[in-house]
Image 1 (cartoon, rainbow over the protein chains, first blue to last red):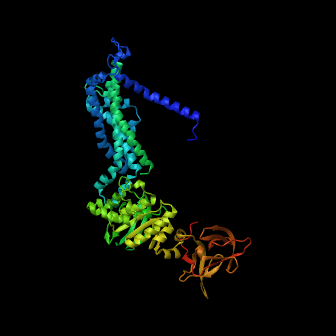
Image 2: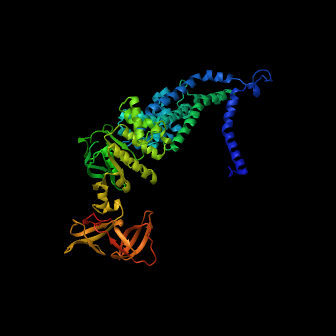
Image 3: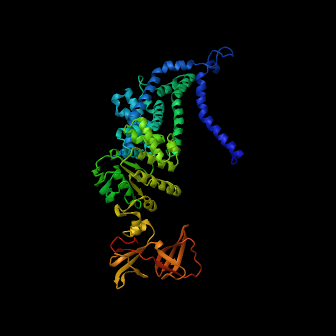
Length: 274
Length: 353
């Protein structure tokens, strides 16, 4: 491009590099730190000498996995359940809000979205104080996660329903002879499939990384992985923390990458007016 | 071929009447166009016929049977939407097959019928394309093929060409007219474009403020509009307050600036007199009778439109496209005999101020 000037290129390059460094560097430190042998860092009584064995080790991962397996499984279970409940409640709910509005449905839609704009700690305290009786039950943690994740599913699906004018598509299907069941099966579901997938990935990522509710509702028996991670950073060595952090990233990165990939397709669809 | 009739259809939204008692018997196997300005209730009428909007009052009859309470999906009335409403997740062929699929027509048979329908709109090679790969004109044709594929009794079209550019509209309009005449399917076509309405419809229904102003053959409605609204909506019109009086030599229309022979059956007394610009003859050699002053000329390609003045009154008149206005030319005009239309002067039937 001839509009590109040398100072402009240098400036853009510098800004990009700085941003990359700021975002990627901490993650890099975490990942690299998680596989380094302690001896390499001079904090061990043993000295690492070249040729005396690998400088890279996976023992921290083994240690973390052994120590935190229950928490990992609990977090995984919460994330999967959150996705399941969001699909079961959020998608039909979004359909009703967007396509079958009733008196007060606009207000309800606003109410569903409220948790997105209030601090997580408020919701957590509300849940603890409001349901003190059930403190320590695993499903209270799930409840907290749902309060945060259902809005994402509802928003994603209502946007898709309204954006592709599913109301008119349904009417077209109706004039072609499609009864309610066929309209849902052949028109509505295919129209929200993509938004539901995007919503599910978001819900998984959010539930997996959710800290506020998880930490405040934390009990030794029902501890989520992020809460355990916090404890690790407080009490354990750098290597163990780094390995724990890397495992945490490994859980959420695939979801985010798929989200990037399918999210791109969504944008193209919207641009082409489909 | 099916007979469609509506009786006293009415619909109000939030207390405001959108359709206020429309009755019409649609011609069997012909195209009827409903034309009117936006907000006149024409689309609401169509949606009530389709069963997508429930009327407050009135009935819809197909082949004499009252279908007012029958839901849209069981009316066998096809519809082409203004936005086409094609299913983006399905291919062209799957879109066209949709009406057959929900009727549980076997796969092989519905494929054949879809190919037939696509052939009608000359898109037989487009079956496997995605909807987003099609141009606006192609999407419009797919929407038509989809509505026709399951052989509905009646076809409704809601401003189907309004999203296309002028040249394509004209071409598709002619194709559509030929196709629908060949199929002999009872069609109700809604548009706000009077040229489209007149050229497509065997019959024309002019609606305004939720009511039928006039219906009939396009030529008849254009030539003999029932009131000033219809006259102005279907074309340009010169409308004057006039008086129709009987003279020894026969009835005459007293225009503010001239007196002309009254058309047959003209009502006596105070009336409105209407003459279209193409029926006002302009001459620059003084052969016509009424002297007038030149005001403006608009070159339209196939002809020239002039605005001339007689005293305080302005008139539109058409002239051939080779007409030129030399400096200082003295113009005169004449109204072609028999082309004046008169209505008795009543509240609400005159030109809007």
